Image (cartoon, rainbow, N blue to C red; front, side):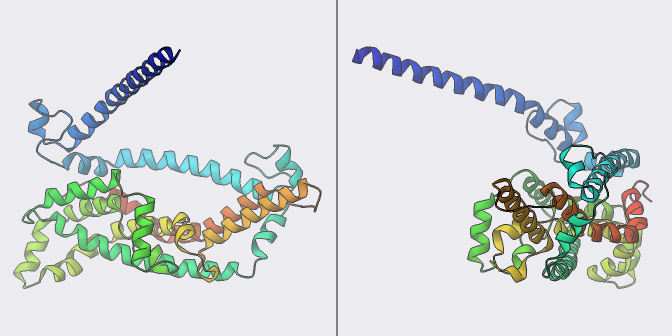
Length: 351
């Protein structure tokens, strides 16, 4: 009996090992085309034509990505798709927030409200600390956006200079951070070790630079004619002076566009505040609204047990909370829209 059990155990182990090997091979086969495509996109034209590229790039070159980001038709198509998706989603959320409890329960709400009711918004605004959280979030977003743009400009401008030694290595390291990170726990331990817990710096410094935005800004800076910078140097301007007086004014649409990206990402940021902030006075608006939604869910469960009654479904509160948090960004967007359009199209024509 013992021998049969041992043989069976060994057989199971062998089977498990074969299954793991098979799964690993399948994952490798699925991953190889993806790695091959990435390698081709990052390789030089000569290496691609000669068939030297496998799963590792040869002759690191980012020109293909520059062409993609400068294709106005592709950017317009992507923008139109995002616009249609966002419009439908926003209409649905607004309808739910303005609909009656019965209409939400019965699933009658689509993109038009049914049984107009503003009680969900009354619940969102009845918290006296809500406006304080809103003001804190506005200050946090403005500070974060300014600091992020400053760091992005200081990093992107030198990377446009061919005389910068190790420029390709720096770009490779920046792109590496787009696919891999240290993880949530190491980041939390680092923030704690630096003494930034329960501080607004924990919401600013860790995510101050976006690799994606940095690459876009570098592409915009590269589109500035070199003759203008050379003229500034002949007039005695320094590198910083040339950046401030020549490059930045010509890149104002790009700066406005990326500032909007940074502002939206910080305004909608919620997970980092949930991990790093425990003092209620430092809650940003997203974390405050999260508490409103969670409290409404608890109230709903209590009502189901017969302990109390509620008038608004949690779905309505969630929808009203989303609109409350999104409206300030929607108000700001029209002011930078003209820069946004120019920022997307700039760099398509050089010279």
